[in-house]
Each structure stands twice: as structure tokens, then as C-alpha cells.
Length: 391
Image 1 (cartoon, one colour):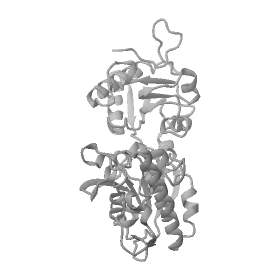
Image 2: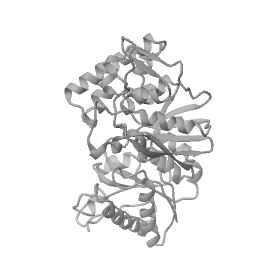
Image 3: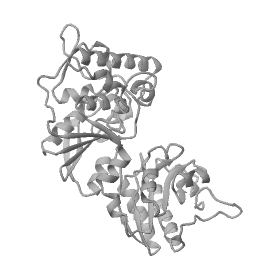
Image 4: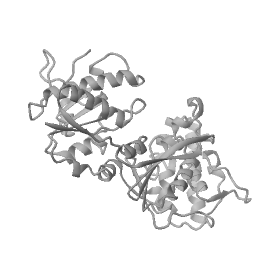
């Protein structure tokens, strides 16, 4: 039997390519042939997954979230450029892990977009997971030539702290990506403003206090009004759109540029031609760092399972909280959790994660002769949550 190994990253631990390599190593040890297809869903790691799929990596020098120059990278292939927040100005670019909820900027993302446009892509894919800022996309737009000024005409630094002071927006000298299809690939459906918006929902994850969340949300309201008075009559409609609140409002900025927001999981499966590769495989092994009740709501493993049917799909996760009836409803024939193999925390231990993934791959390989795939049971258990044994 041939197995297709198609996981997402294990966030904070291993890239999708590393996860696929370790699972494939285990399968090979069990005598099972496999092909690897590292995947992404529009979050951090999307550029890495594109490179693993054959796109060409290009280094880009940009400003990190705090403004410090750093080197990120983009991926370009077959007329498509993939640019992500995470490796340009995301949380991981903050110095010493210190959050800057008011002063972090999306400027580096805009700089990466400018450099990606030099390759004349027909399509620009924006992956917005892992952002550090809540600036409504001011930084991104500033890097493209937009200028923001207060009521006295004084230019403003593009960051969350400036949102409340923006009065006018000038895009006369902006470099607009004419003739380029812009796609925001992700699973965030929040609008820009209000209790379900960028500041309220994601601000605390970026270090914002309750007072700072209120400040940022008020500032985002002001930013929308500033765009409306500066020649963008659809600014309010863009702010209310599903996904406008992604990446601290970069989704909103992308919509102003004419972007379309789509399901990241569906889009990247199409981009990497998953359906074309699937025929001929008797089993698909997928996974990501956490599988829980949200997995069935458009997350990559569940979307992949639906598109793979009737080919059985086994998922591997750093942790899983799904009950047996729920993981079957989500389309998985079995789930392996690293937590069922060790009592140690694997999230911050890449080497342990590698070892366990290889072991899980070997275990899956030993069971592929029985189809449909039946997860093993622990002694004394009528049906184990995960087909695994503790180390």
C-alpha cells in the first residue's frame, strides 16, 4: 500500500516538512512506501510549505514587528507569490519574545509584498497567521506608499498607537499591485471592529490589556472613518467583512486593495494540487499540533479528510481532545496523539517530537495491511481515544 503523508506544521515545534519526514521515516521502517506533501492553511509556515511543494524561495530584507531589520523569505512559483506575516513581522520577530501590542507594525509584510511584486506574479497569496500587530494594516499600506496624517497634516508612524490620531489617508503615490489577483488565505472570519473584532479577540494574545484593547478598537473605528473621508466609500463595508479582522486588521487593508478572502485550507490544497496527487494512495496521514473541537470547523486536517473520502485518513497530533465519536464525525479513521506516548510536554521539545512521530509512523505502517484502517485498542479499553501506547 502507498501512503500519502500530508500534515500541517506542529506550531512552535516542527515545520510541516519536518513532520512529514519523520512520519515517512517511521512508515519506511515498517516497510511501507509513502510520498510526502507538507501542507499549510494560510498560517505561519505557509512559505515553507510552498517551498516544499516546489516553489522557489527568495530572501527578503524587511522590518520586523518592532522595526528592526531582519531577513524573511517569500516563495514564488508558476505565477504565484506566497508572502506571510509570521516570517516577516510576526510574533516570532519581536525581540526577546516581548510583546508590543501598541507599537508592533505590519510594515514588514508590506515590504515583503513590494519585493514579491518584482517577480511579476499573476497571483499574490497572503498568509496572515502569527501576526504581532493590531494596526489595521497601516504598516503594510505605508510600505506600499500610503501616508497617514493627523488633523494637522503631521505624518504618523504606522502602528496601533497611532490609530486614534489618523485623520486623512493619502494613496496618491501608492504602488498598487495592478493586474495581480490578491488572495488572503486563512480561517479567521472575524470582522475588523467590535466585540468580535481584531482588537477584542486577538489583542490579548498579542499582550494587550483590557484598556489597550479598548484603545485599539476605538482606533480601528477611527481608521475606518479616516479612509471613508479620504476617498474610500467602501471602507465600512470592508471593515464589516468576514476576515477583515485577521492579523490585527491586515485583512481589512488587503480588502481595500481588492483582495478576496478564502478558506486557507481549501486554497492551499488546491494550490498544491492535492486532488490530482490523491489517486493511487490507499491511506492518507495528516495532522497538526492540536486537534480539538475547532478542527471540524474548516481546519486543514478535517478539510483534507473530507476531500480524501473514501480514502481513509489517519491524523497525528501533538495533543487531541476529540472524543471517538467526534473524530469519526470529523472524517478521521484514527487519531494518534503524542501525549499518549509520553508524559513529557512535547510542544517545546522538537527532538522528542521527532522521535515520537517516527515511532507513530512505524506503528501506522504496521497496521496498513488491515483496511479499513482500525486503530488499535489499549488493553481493557473498549475503544481507545487514540491508537497509541505510552512509552
